[in-house]
View (spheres, rainbow, N blue to C red):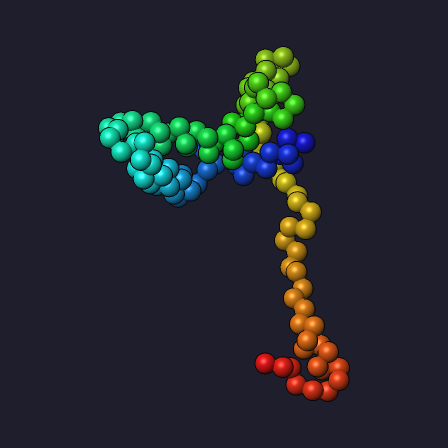
Length: 126
């Protein structure tokens, strides 16, 4: 239910490709540097802004960092830790699969004018 509602892309932070993290970091830095409010801020402050935006990226895209759908006060990772403590069994989320209705289906492109022209025996208008 959580995967269907929150649409995570990765299970854990380690699963996020380095290229995607670098891209997100570049975007966050560019946005922070181009913001007039940050014009006179030192580089360390900009680094903290970038890290904050990366944290937000993790919350949106990493399953274990997302707020749990049924109880947003805790993350999915915290819920797993609670269940491990309660049951005494090791619980690991290794993967998930999310299906979206219509995803992956090619939409048929129709040329109604061409179809009519072929039926009446004329060429397609240009």
